[in-house]
Amino acid sequence: MIDFLKNKGQKAYDEISAIAEKPNLLFSNDREQNSAEASYNLFTIHKLNKLIKKDNISINELEQVLSFVEASWSSYLRKHYIGKSFVFYFWGDYQIPAIRVSVVSYYEGRELPFECILNKISDMKEVLSQYKVKALFDGITVIESDEFDEGNDNNKDEAEDTYMLTIYCNIIDC
Image (cartoon, rainbow, N blue to C red; front, top):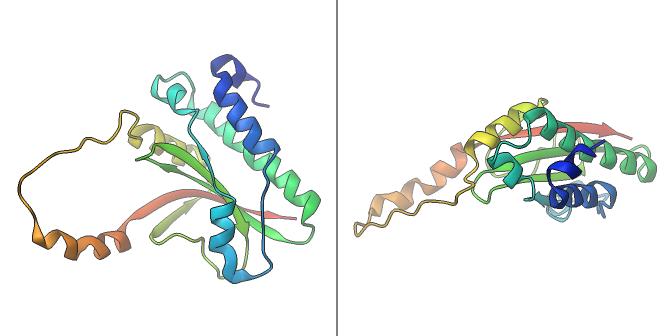
C-alpha cells in the first residue's frame, strides 16, 4: 500500500513499515490507565520530514501513509482484542517537528490524555495540511533579550489551558 514511498525515501518507508507492521502495543483493563497506554503506544515519525519540507510528497500520499498505519493497527487489534474498542489518533508536533501516532482503549466519556483543548477531527488531510504549513523544519528561532518580563509566568497556566491541538481520531471497534 505504501510501496510508492520506497522510491521517494527508503528511510521513511522503513520507519513507517516498522511502526505499522510491528506495533508492540500495550493495554490495560483499567480506564484510569489511558494516559499510560497513550505514552507507551506513542510513536514519533521523523523520516517523512525531509520529503514534506522539499514538497516531494503530497497530502494525498501522506494520507495514504497514515491510513496504512491505522489499517495495520486496526487489523492487529481486531485479531488480538476481540470485543474491545480503541481510539487511534495522530497529530503534528510542530516544534520537534514530527507526526505522532498512538492508540488507547476507548471508554465512553473518557477523553484522550492531553492537557489542552482538543479539536478532534475525522479528516486526516486537515491535520497533515496544518503540519506541512506549521512544522518548524528549520528549527526554532531563539530571540535573545536582556529584558525580563516578570508578568510572563502568571500567564503560563492560562496559555496552556487555552492551547488548542488539532488531532485526527477514529474509534476502532473490534
